[in-house]
Amino acid sequence: MTKEHKSIMAEIYLQTVEKLMMSVPDNNDSRLWRENVSTKNLGPVTIGFSSYVGMELILNESFFYSSVSTSSAMKVNSPVITATVGNRQQHNLTAPVKLTLHHKQLHLSNPVCVYWKYQTSGSSWSPEGCKMLISNVSHTTCSCSHLTSFALIMAISEQKIPDDSALSIFSSVVVSISLVCLALAILTFLLTRSIVDVNKTVYLHLSLCLFGAHLLFLTGVESTSNKTLCSVIAGFLHFLFLASFTWMSLGGLQLLLLVRNLKAVKYSSRQGLRRRHLLPVGYGAPALIVAVAAVVFPSGYGGEQHCWLSQYRGFFWSFRGPSYFLITANLLLFTSVLYNLRSQLHGVNSDVSKLKDTRENFAFGAMMDFEWFVFLLTQQKDIRVER
Image 1 (tube, rainbow, N blue to C red):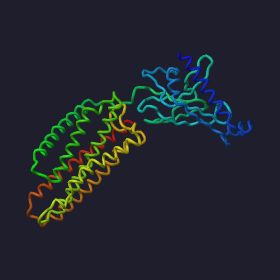
Image 2 (image 1 turned 90 degrees about the vertical axis):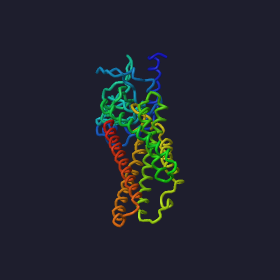
Image 3 (image 1 turned 90 degrees about the horizontal axis):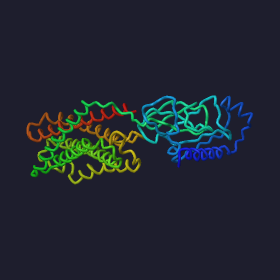
Image 4 (image 1 turned 180 degrees about the vertical axis):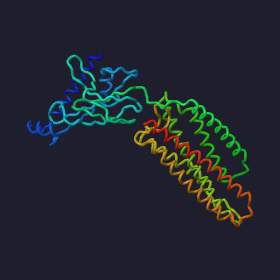
């Protein structure tokens, strides 16, 4: 089917829908309409909206002729909608009508509000009488002085954050060093089989989660060419990072229980966390959050630039919310640890090994909290730049 045939068929369809919408009974007298609605914007009136599924693929960007030359390719990036007021044709309204259009693809730039201009010589998308008021990553609000069929045309080139090569290289080096250190830590935990306690279990699984997250982040976060693979990578990153936070919190809770029993003559593992409860909590809670997020908004995983969580509809809060909660809980736990240490160390001169272990655990936990806090601050900065 040629471009002209597509245009003719689409126009017939649009005009048919417009006539059907304008056939809705309207009890407004023509004189009252002219006096109140057209000139004063007063009085009751029937308003109709219609959205067309897939019409943007037929009446696409090839029907857009702009007087301003652009270096980027353009694309119709919203559903085509028709708006009518009463049972009349389009009107030159004294007050413009505001329309908010949803982006079909996120992170495209330079939105242009257009309407379908009927012409005998060849209809096309035209920006006449329309202008863009405000736009973000997912929606654009247009202002138009008339009512007909509307759409949104945007540049295909994405609004990318300027690439800082030095920072990118530095991040890769730091992540690589972290992978080596985490691998050595995991190897150490696995070789010390004679030591079987809760602390070893917690920090072994914390190291495993961090190693997996760092490795996947280093090798797969930019694999955006395959959308399905990118979504899977984003889902696993979501799970591994949340699991790391959870195991870090379990370590903080175990540390608090250990400090509270510093004066115990015979310390029993039963006074701390139970090993059989660690795995269901450490992996079950993050898996539940990821499963709920994937069911509620499955397209939130993956992106145009990175395989991570989308900002649309607040989906990123499925990571940010739990992580903020767990970091706050860790800070409260470590504050309680400091308080208990101060109150109990006055009369404690024995059991030096237990105190040394407690100090090392506290330093490790504080270091992990600081690392995650910096990570979240970096994410917050990136979000502001993207928007």
